[in-house]
Length: 444
Image (cartoon, rainbow, N blue to C red; front, side):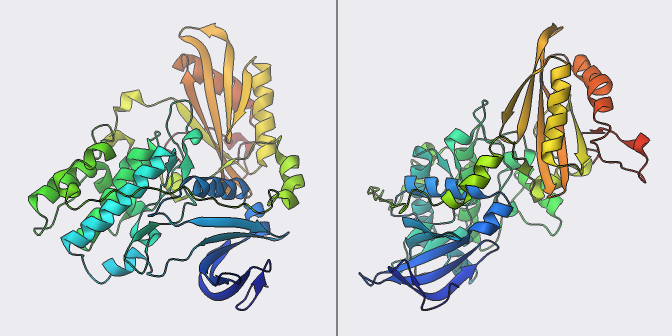
């Protein structure tokens, strides 16, 4: 058991508990040889295996090895036993930036210094193809010299995570700080989404409160989508202009980091820092070897996408904000159904239907991509079926047309897909099998 005084790997002596979550605990510790303080994040392997988070942990390690920067919490090394994974990280003594803001708004020069350091760190991340996706004062730490350190890359993404459209599609982040295009669920540029979150952080530092706030979550999302906020009277004219450029709800016209760093308000006293290359030791290269058999056994199956609060909220027609972003006539043809069958059974049935209708099938990131072989009125029909895990025993599948004729797509759904899914789709009303149905988008 991990507790104060425990010696890890004959190298680190555990100190007090700094914090804990569902899958990990963070302790203060000392390097026995050097006496240096470190923070050790201890992750329970069994717990992350049960919820399918192995790839996320691997990605977090990959990301933190890429982003060695004075304003980013440094990962020194990664070690593991049969049951635990240990992140040995820089120990940051000054607490969260949130704690400073909670006492009241900051002076302009102080807020500007922190914002400059944040932008410098995020610009470096983006140069390495890393997008943080959960920037907020709680994830910004301060050392004893009041130097800002970006932490918690658990929701970060690498550029290689982008789909063929060059955009990210995972809906994540903290509601009050999330960019409108993420709420919209139409794909987003990770760099532009991070810039928006930085803008919210800047507003909070200077105002002492959030720009977008409402007791009704959906009303707050509508305000975010419209860019509906007001700057307090103590914001200088230069700062007001910058804030409105950063919190532009249209990502195509939102200010870029390159332009932001040339802004007069931002440039005042700005001293860029140079990142020093630092090595992160992975210890044993086989930190996941104990779960290797499990991973190998499941490698041929497709892992469904886990749904989060954003995804569930977006299923309701009343909560659909896409009309704020695009013409309703341009909405893609799509339908949804739910199932209590295992994900493997859903995938097998969809592949069976595809084979019967001469579709080529490709598995990709929780999605089945069906490519028709027949030439239709508008070329070959292409369909995506994305599987979401709502709970371990309840799944939702979103079927959407990616190319081809809409009428041919609807015919395929009504005549081929719907009848063949009779034993898969969940019964909505009282167990009557005649009520099995595909649910049109927005009616869940």
